Length: 212
Ligand SMILES: Cc1cc2nc3c(=O)[nH]c(=O)nc-3n(C[C@H](O)[C@H](O)[C@H](O)COP(=O)(O)O)c2cc1C
Image 1 (cartoon, rainbow, N blue to C red):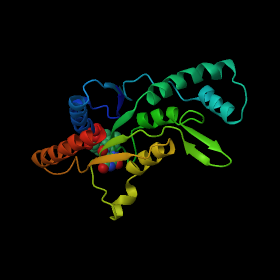
Image 2 (cartoon, helix red, strand yellow):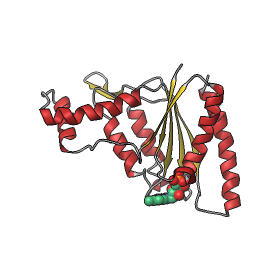
Image 3 (tube, rainbow, N blue to C red):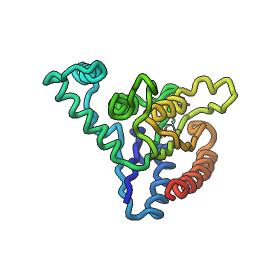
């Protein structure tokens, strides 16, 4: 039995385009792997600990090999719990909207908690930086109101997909598959619905591909 961690990063619940496509992935995944467990985490409703002074101090203490003070240690325990839940999964699904060309601030907060030395990445004189979350596939469903096709001038504005890929790659992910729902704010509702249906089919195929 393995575990799928389903990370939602839209606050729009049933109205979210990224979540509605990712939900189809989950539906198919459940059908194909009924004994797997699915842990759903929405970064807008999850109680994410602050990543402020004591937590940053704790991170620097680790980087510089210094002992943790009591406040730093308390803050760090909460960060560790978030990382532990993340690393407990075998497969990952992320639903992410584009916000101001990047990612929603709560997803950035979550990533700031996850990306920690000695937990999700390491550094050594021989290897430089290396990811520590390896051998686990990730499927990402991106939603964005506009269009950012590769090779077009607007592609340079896309800080969503490249950033997500960089952050997860830094943590060790190499098998990253994506579904891109573009122009969610353009065209008639009928056109948007038709595009959504096609992407839902893609989500079903990816669920099957990742279930082997
Ligand atoms: C705060 C905010 C900022 C947004 N910024 C962008 C943007 O920079 N580019 C874009 O194409 N769409 C932008 N959008 C539109 C969303 O990307 C689009 O509605 C998408 O479908 C949202 O995903 P969701 O439906 O899963 O919540 C923005 C929406 C919000 C709420």
